Each structure stands twice: as C-alpha cells, then as structure tokens.
Image 1 (cartoon, rainbow, N blue to C red):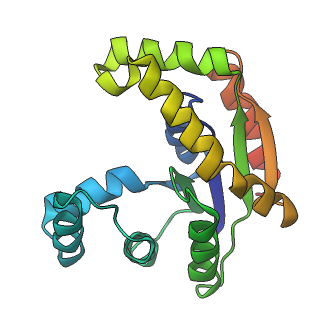
Image 2: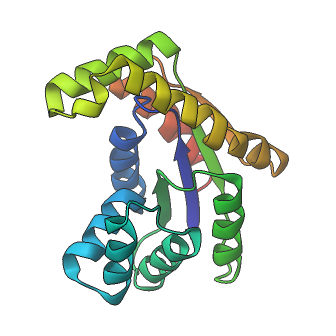
Length: 191
C-alpha cells in the first residue's frame, strides 16, 4: 500500500486536493480532524477518551491519534493506500506515524507540499470564510497566527522528509484543476 502526506499552510488547498486525489488513486483520505469528530460521534471507547481530553481544552495526545489512525488502517481493505491530510503536524508525530506504518510493513512514500504565496493564502482564507462561514478564516490576526504556527511547528517536517528522499514540492498557485494535475502527475510515478 502506498502512503502519501499532503501538506501546505492553511489555505493552500490540501483538503480540497486531498479528497480529489484520494478518489482518483483509490486511496483512503485520512483527515484526523474528521476522524476525531467521527470517533466522538460514534461513542467508541477511543472517542470517549478523546472527548474527555478535549472537554478540558487539552490537545489529544499523539499516541491516541496514532492509535486512531492505526485502527482505521487495520480496518480498511480494498484501497491502494492512504492519503494523510492534516497529520502529522510535528516531527515527533511524523516519526510516530512512520513507526506505526513500519510495524505494518508500510512506509511514507511521498510528502506532497503545496507552495503558495503568503498573500494568496490570506486571500483564499478570507474567501473561504465568506463561502463556508468559518469565522476563524475572516480575522487577519487569526490567519497570521495560523500561518505562523504552521511555519514554526509543521514546516520542520519538510527537512525531516527531505532527508528521507520523500519530499516533493508542488506549485500550489493557480486554479484548482491545474494544481490537481500537477499533484496527480507526481503521485502517478509511485503507482
């Protein structure tokens, strides 16, 4: 099975592209945010544990998120692999994900990183706020903070993946379709 990470700062289009790419390549799209909400809504033991943690305003520990992903992988069949969207967010999470995959005879095959100009990110997030009603995307201070957090916490994963030869930068500027084609060409090489 092939495993792809799709990365980029807030507003880079990774969620939009991730869903489309997963469909094209028969990959299971794993969005940890969606998975957390689904576990809680289903009332699973893991969901109850996460709900208790989140109700205190705390972050769900890495090992709990890894357990949730492992459960999803172990319960999946009929797909060509997995596309991770929104996870990992730190180098420690990347190492934990690699370890979990290695125990299953798998690895991270590619880290696709959408490169988008700062001004374009801000423009896209403001438009998203108008279109989807996400208030966190309409406040310029919140937008700048989210981009700063991405740069300080998440961007170090790029160096980690570059050392492993799996980092693949992608021009994330332009229309949805042309960005999709760039990503699809890179991914196709792995099949």
